[in-house]
Image (cartoon, rainbow, N blue to C red; front, top):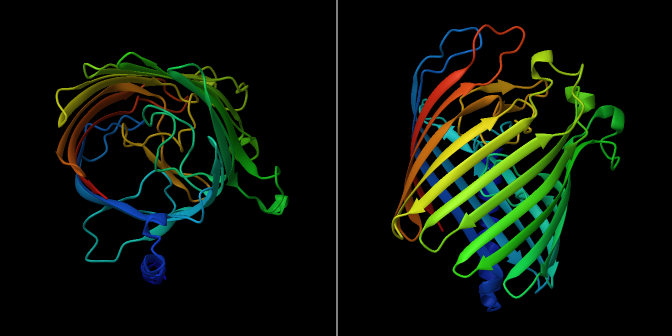
Length: 369
């Protein structure tokens, strides 16, 4: 079935490309994709019972292939296929070493979009339209399903303002008949983004509110105030700051040790040595309920779990630590990145006897078109 899906997708793209070429409208169709090869090492990963996970060395790959087609100057539609476990929204990566078996391919984008004069609205499954300088709060691999829109305004000679919002369906339940708008388990967000050019430097400030009505399935909701800031200098020195504060009432709904664990913070300093070589150093302290961990980044920790609905995800919260990364651009569309993280848990649950820990190294080779 997955092979047939991939074959049909590629054939459809080729047929569309041929037809549009005959009409001399090739510029309306854009094909894009990327492939990654990764070496990953995990060390000193302690569990909550005090024992250690086995050290892990593995090879992985990621494959993505998509298209965009401009129906006219205001309407486009698109889609994308990705590798990886369809039940893991955070990761399109596949581990090598499964006795020459074929790998899963699934749809992670399928949408229709309207845009005009700085306004856009899309419906379907697409990339998250909330701006962030990194993926600490929302992993770029998590493509939400629903409706999103935004509008850009001029805010002075050298600055602009962007408003964006979205309504995303998280889960349809049988008792809600799965079709009732507003009755399903959903998440919403609203973001105000300010961008200013300060001479040759650039400043971005982007506060947001992200909420969910997940209490019916998780036992609690999220109502998170988010603030992102980025300052990029002409000298190659860059700064990112993320701040998260969950304002939802968690008393009596979660483990007592975590009721006040609602604040998250991360900071990154980066420097571009040249057009080819750059580096960045990060620090993060992410309390248990300061982010929606199944949607947040899955890079820093190895703490995987599966929820009652069969969704596999990384528990990307309740930790603090440092990250170090180097990137080298081999050519225009080919780069390699070396990354290192060292983390430790923040607070033990009432049933735990130890804090989780972990050290991770990744070396990636990325090609895109």
